[in-house]
Image (tube, rainbow, N blue to C red):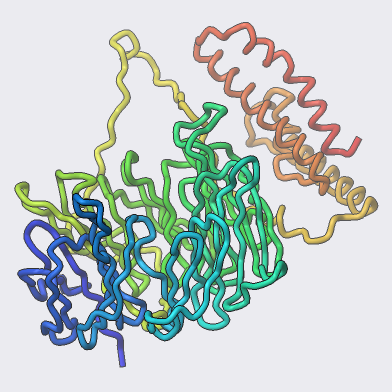
Length: 560
């Protein structure tokens, strides 16, 4: 039986209603107030009198509804009433009430089968089994526990806990397997680190590893207003590592692929880099630089969207991560929300209040860049929330990726390209291509990170001889070709012949890479000088070093 089309729930100043998913996009049902509604027959199941409730959350199997309202105390100082309620969705009865003062981590965490539920209480994590909240089945006690995350999947359950550092002691994250919490060696893995005021812990789908983003509120070096971030990898087998990010700057987003074998990180000062890493924390593919601060894998893990939202203009890059091929580059301007449809084909972007109170609305895209449906909220109304109807994994099978845009009745919106201001004195002169930042193209890193075994000295020597012979052949072939332009400056030949060489020695490769960067910068300075731009003294000195750099580069390539 084919799965039903996912519904879209829309909440705003116009009320709460549902919209049929692609390809119809017709309004399904309107609800005058927030209640528990059956999606299948649109019937009212239960209604609760909770006028101050501001947070709602269903358990994974939709058997328990958790509600939270701000905690208040009376003027005489007596304790307030419990503000966290857990309701049985089937009967509507209140299973348990707790006092939860903070909004942060207010909702209990369930395992996917709801066999286990946990919540943080002071210095302990309390565990409940089979939704029996009257009896605490187990406790995990650590001094000053700040946060915890349950692993996805089924038994054996695992939990990651974070304890912030104090009085010169480092912060640490530990992994445990439920219910083995006692004893000094009960932890599956432990990773300690300094420079961490808060952390974000991300389990992969198979619950074999955790990524930890450690953040500080203040960057003491003054390089970033947003503090300093580091990325750590912790596996349940005890292995741990610091993920080395090639570019300095903040870490905007980290996301696991559903295969649990790789993850993508978006990091670095703008324009930001995006890189896919394997479980050894080696780079697999580098997407280069661009205006991006978020990454989203499709439910099946075969498509990755890199996007720049917030203070960026909404550029999206849709990639086929099996072949590392770009599918489309649509632009969703002013978007504050992004979500993949459970079918893995459609994308939802929305502009919601209070983040933005103008131009509210949502769009449904196909991943090839076509807008299939668009809804703009009237100017006197607001859109607060939009979300897809959830489905279990495997309901929608993965389909073959297509690169041609699907047809759509909604006209495409071509973004207006703003031209740079040119003063009157330069408007009749040729335009010189100058950029604030050097853009880096995508690069496949498998050839560099895939060498599991280091080459022997003999193999390295043979490899260098082979590359030198290949370079000589290319040089001879270019000299014999009559159709080519006159022979350029002598520095261009060795640069081209070594552009794809790898010595096998990481130190030598690093030196070669640095020399290429310097030569590229010299080439750009020469182009600027050719256009009539007056160079500084230090820039002229760089150009004079070109011959020496070329000789050093050639010596490194030939293994001298």
